[in-house]
Length: 141
Image 1: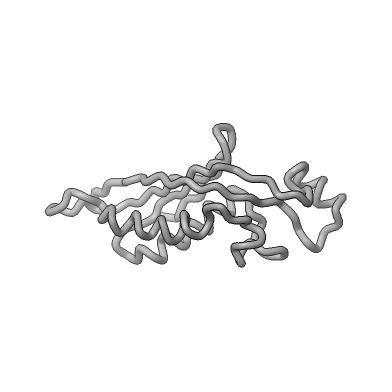
Image 2: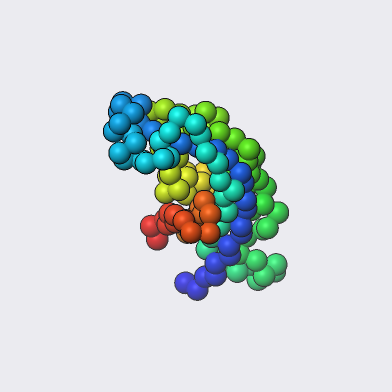
């Protein structure tokens, strides 16, 4: 069946560090480098969320932009902006998910898909820490 995609960009600023609590400092530093240091560091993240669906013949949209924007505000902007991901987001607390770009992209895709329901398919989420590094998580279609 023919479909179209739509990508919406949202930004947020957040701090994090990479660390496995079951590892000692030397092993964490060997695995994560400077990103394992006790002092957290921050990024101005850029997050692109792509959805796929059929074009509504009445509106011409794949998804109601108001709905998508509300979901992205709740699931991305309000959750992550000006947060310490390791301390403020329970799923990324010590011993849980390491706040890598890959894990952030997967987490966001799952949350946005759950909030949007079956109306559209979230096909990918790209999270960029800066202009030189990004991670993309794609759903299985």
